[in-house]
Length: 69
Image (cartoon, rainbow, N blue to C red; front, side):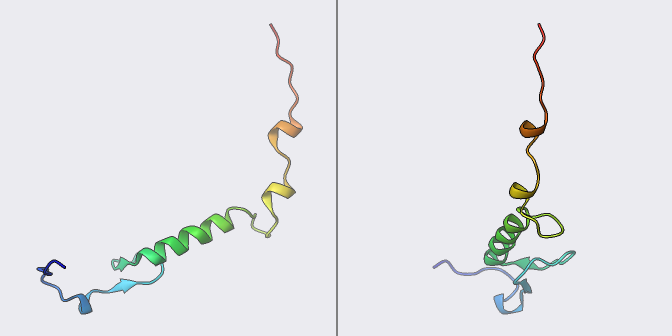
């Protein structure tokens, strides 16, 4: 293991264990991974908690068009 030559002891570095808006602290990789997973799950539902893929029609299902020469 390489010698730590930083001037700040690791015990004095402030680390956030979850994303915090406006924080100047470092963030753990686990916190980032957890936040991404939560965002992926939230992206599947609308504000009322409805499953987007089952609640809303797809464009191809509601728009019919005929190509003209």
